[in-house]
Length: 168
Image (cartoon, rainbow, N blue to C red; front, side, top):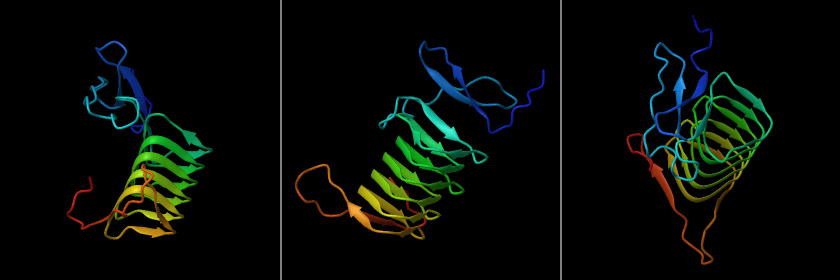
């Protein structure tokens, strides 16, 4: 039987471990590969993530307790544990997450504890952060506001990265 599903479609498959799942792409091999044990452990449910492909447009708010990878377009607010935004992605709405690595366009406010703004990113709106790293070439047209998890004032931390540096 020939599958007519596009290559960007993601499905959930059971692994050999009870109660665990893995994500797999439709391709020539239909076997799901287990995810690395460390994937998705920084705030989301361990090993669970959602992907919105570049051909996906969502109109409405997204709330996820898992990690979220957005390559497409969202017209609405995004709230999740950890966010990865692709360079071709566009979000029109507010973004709230524990950690985020942003490379696309955002028109709205961003509130993230650990924020990495990649060189291709274009943010139009205010940004609240606890720790921020910005690559050379990234653009933020709005106010930057440092937030702190403690009651005592803390010096702002802004890391400017060159094109060869890795954000961490």
